[in-house]
Every structure is written in structure tokens, then in C-alpha cells.
Length: 267
Image 1: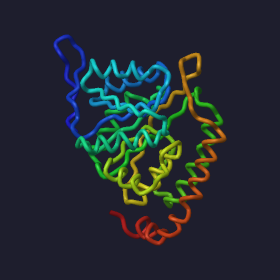
Image 2: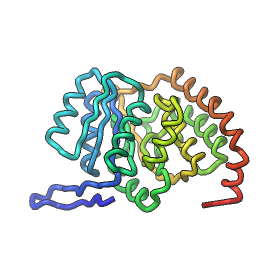
Image 3: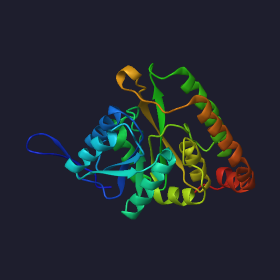
Image 4: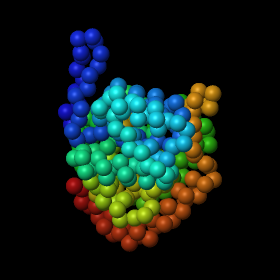
């Protein structure tokens, strides 16, 4: 992983860039929080890549300026908005082409804890076959409807993975083994929108990728604080619900194998 913190003569932090693990941030009209997120991630890791998913709020230019001044920041610009999963897929494919093996994903809205990046990356380096999933620790800023609503998704994922230890399906702060995830995403045209996070953990578990859960604080910002949310309650919950029904035939087809792996054979 080779990401070490060194101090320069002026006391500033300097990171030795990792050749295996990178931070990957999908970005769509995040406002100033997008720039803040990239800068926060760079304080704790190098390299940091951003996939701009057809943004129209002027943040693309700001991010490109950061990349021009910092060789450890790379910005990939998609001409049209395709969804979170689509943006991440482009990033994963390019990262794999560049020789990286793992990617930590985090949202560009400032909700995810940049200070937790080193611990998640270290855990991934110790268990490279696993996906390292953030288990969100909510504070008073979390909307109650969001906290309660994710329980349904978590329950459905636990059923379709036979309670294999996935604590949270929707918290996008996590480290993926890139090769396994790219292979999964190449097999389906889904996983390109809000359904990405939940479907990724289910399909990766089916593929034999174990889950490691680590607690991570989450902060929801109000509009007055610069918070931007593209979550749409009815649209996105319908998408999630339909996803679990869509996965049900595949789950039932491989249920005997999953039962054997879950209860009788442990790698």
C-alpha cells in the first residue's frame, strides 16, 4: 500500500502515494462541499481521483484547478450525467488500467469522514480479499426518515446474503477490491444509479468477497451549511425495492451454494 505520512521541514504533512489503493470520489453538482471533500481526502491520502458526472454547477473547473496544482489529484470528466454507479464504474476501470487493486469510495457532499481513510485502507491492506464497509454512526444531523428507511434495505440485503455480516448497505464510504467489482459490473447493465451501493455488496458477497465492517461517523449538512442532496425519497426507494426483487431469482438459484458456503464451508 505504501502510503506513509512524512513531515517536511516546514512541519507540513507529506504523503507517499500508494501504488495499490486510491480514493475515488463521484461528483455531481456538489457545490463547495465537493472541493472541500477533495481537499480533506488529500490531507489523509494520495492519490485521490474524482469522477465528475456531468456537473453543471461550476465545480468542474474548480476541481480541475486543484488537479493542475496537485499531481496526486486526478479529475475524470464525464460529458453527461449517468448516475453514481456509472461514474464509479468509469473510475474503477481506469484505476484497474493504471494498476491499482483497491479503491475507497466516498461521496462528494462532505458527509463521509476523511479522517477515517487511513484506518480503512490499512484494514484493506491486511485483508485484501475483503470489502471494507463503513458502518455509519449517526449524530443529531441525520434525518430520521433516512435512518429509518435504510433499515428495510439492510434487512433485504441480509436475507439475500444469509446474514453474512453486512451491517449497512447504503453507506458509500467503503473500500472495494477493484478486480472483483469490475467483473461484477461488467455482467449487468444495472448498478449505475442509486442502486449501486446496495447491489455491489450483495453481488460481491455472492462472488465470495467477505465483508469487514468498521464504524465511521456521518454528518448531514443543511442547505444553510452548503449541504447538497440529490436523494429523492420515493424515486430512490422504489429503485432499491425493485432491485431486491430483481435479485431474488438469482438468490434462489444459488441458494444451495450460499447455504453451503455460509454454514458448512468457510474459506
